[in-house]
Length: 395
Image (tube, rainbow, N blue to C red; front, side):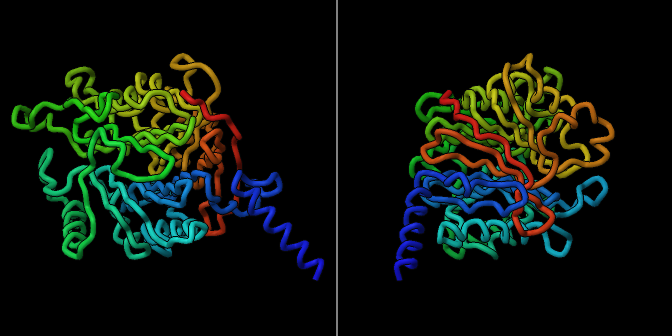
């Protein structure tokens, strides 16, 4: 009886310590399963299926937000091999991953979903995710009419719009992304600021915004912005910790011919320096421009890569460049094609990680963070490597 009482006392003591962060022997260790989320901490999971983008955020109180759930049908070898395997659709793997990690919160649901833009590698897994988990608030860049900048007749776009309309008819909540708002996604203790979408960007003052894109009626057909240029961007702040993500937002101005097309740079400048930034558009040549890198200055870059072209060498070189900002930085890719490695080995050799789920774990109160990479070849969530801890910048 005394032994049982002692064990119970030790367990209660461990739980009490957990409220302030993990004990040293409970930290994430290579070769062991990822430690579950703990109340007070903020976890940001960049899910690596090899077929598209998806990010799961679990807030300090257990609130959850998923950003995108992609399922590209681009075949190998241009696309990476599906992870964990081709036995399930990418959206099914994403739904299972989210359900597994949300179990620690005691709530098998997503409080909110953000759809940054309507491309298959960001939306085509959503039906499977919705089948796996109830979704509270659904937000996308275009609701309710999807006519801006021009209607899409692509099958994936029609399927997405039909799914949203069916959700609304069933009584589900869907909202348009409100640029400038800091109250659309409610996470106690965390601010999620809506930075940009549809050619509109937050000014950095109150909730005021400004327009970047001219009226579509004035543009030549070839100059009308595409889905990538209309992507939704956010900045997350928890205590001193800052995080930036912008879907496939681009900084390409077509060599200066259309300067207004660069929506990524104003969004990054509005965000200001952060600790962790996701490289927009998978680290492609038309995003993560020099002024974006100078504005964000993160210590950790994350590249959601699933194609042989991800990342492009010029964007990766900018992320690594000490000329754009000084100091330490690490670059994590969720995947890397052998062809990309062969062509750009002098750069890809400098990646901190080149495959796996990339999880940013922020300490209670947002005082510090670490990055954990886990194996995406099965569902065991085995830790491959860790980076950190680092103090949050408070910038």
